Image (cartoon, rainbow, N blue to C red; front, side):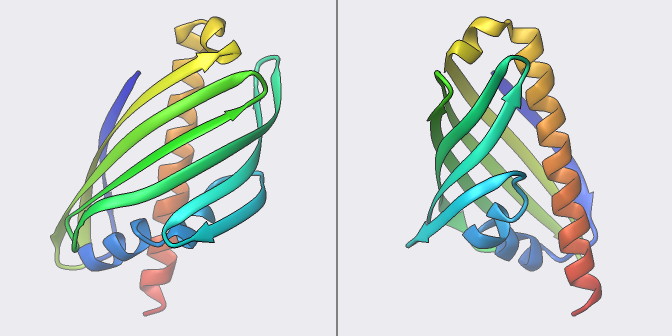
Length: 149
């Protein structure tokens, strides 16, 4: 599955880049984290998940790489749990316009196991909803931080 979009945020390109490349700050946006470990840029976490009849814990490992200061970062991850797997690769390109930035992003995701048998509409719809929630949480958090600088 492929997802892509763009959004404006009231923060400088440097603030956006610093947030996206900070493993702890990015992990703080993810709901229902039960365990979190960060080691040299690698994030490992256990997250409670629920999608239709699939409920349980999911072990996730993410890394941030291929960084170009203030304009580009890539996030990759792999997870498994509840009889399902997910692999994803995301790219964020940041364009600053003073105190405002535009973030263009895209994510390629592969789902396997039990979740893959649920039907692409259900999984795609749930994924799109989750991405919208992450973007909204990101915007609220970074814009709140930017107001206090």
